[in-house]
Amino acid sequence: MGELQLKDLYDGFRDAKTIKAYQKLIQEDAKKLEKNINIMEVCGGHTHTIMKYGLLQLLPENINFIHGPGCPVCVMPKERIDHAYILSMQKDVILVTLGDMIKVPGSSGNLQDARSKGADVRFVYSPLECIKIADENPNKKIIFFAIGFETTTPMTSALINQVITKDIKNILFHINHITVPEPMRVILDDETNTIDAFIGPSHVSVITGSKIYEEFPRDYKKPVVVSGFEPVDVMQSISMIVKQFVENRCELEVEYKRLVSYEGNIKAQELNDKFFERRSHFRWRGIGDIPNSALQLKEQYDYLNAEKLYESILPNEEIDDHKLCICGEILKGKANPKDCKVFGTACKPSSPLGSCMVSSEGACAAYYKYGNLIN
Image (cartoon, rainbow, N blue to C red; front, side, top):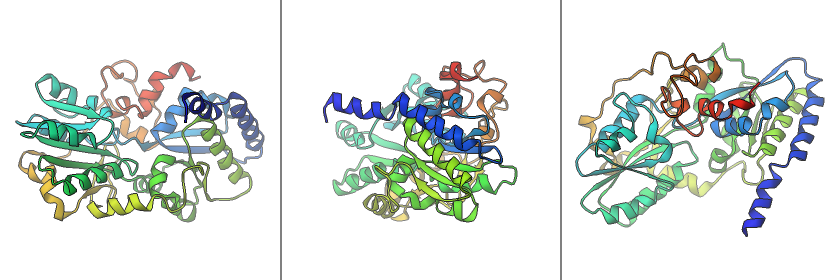
């Protein structure tokens, strides 16, 4: 596809006339609602779209957004960040991870601090770049600090498969992959939650299929619409949710039908299942322990598992966030970034106190970057 064609494709999903048409449709249907609707957009990518394109200002007052926990960097606890920091400081180790990790604060500092102290920390777009790094540094241990939801897990699986197939001896893995449905369930099980419906992340659903959300309309009576990330996608998804309430329905629907199926990417799922199993427990930053919400390498791959091989130097104790940081309440949908006393002052992207200000998907980062659009 040529550059002009690709631009035209994106422009279609950002078209002002289409957005305003959905605005009118939502406003008309919202007049028929008997109560306010609180919609949680699970993924931080949706939060940024909502803020960047001023979608908040296009909606009637009886439709509200609640920001969710779908930012993998934001929910990574300090002790796991400390693992990355400690591993990066080991002799003859090159730590490789994704770019959002560079400024996430741990208890000893962040990976940018580690680099300033001489650690070899590298940031990549694709895990497969580790193979080139390993080939160029045969006397170093390359540790891939894997992070992300179901979206990025297959990329890690593909790297593991290549390491085994090519018998690469100097690549290890520290696995921090997490899953979406479990924190959604925990949030809904809290009787104080005010969520009426969910916008589900499309990139996760491309891999898993929309089937992972079936329980929420069925068991919790909360509609879910799986949405793309462009503003037209989000507005259409909101319209679909409002329409469900007007018609007294509670269903799982897919707005992002151009890529999301019910079953998902079966080959990717099979590759993940080959290497990974569920952790019985995993602590989410600001949320707490969520059983079966994260993945780990199967025991037969312990020889690739940096968490096992460096176990003696990696701490296990839980480390709390800064006392002034309310990221936990934001991730649980109980607070707004502007409720934080240090938002935009002591805590900002150049000097973050909490993880929600660090990541490109963090709610606080979205509010800071696009705050001029907020009423």
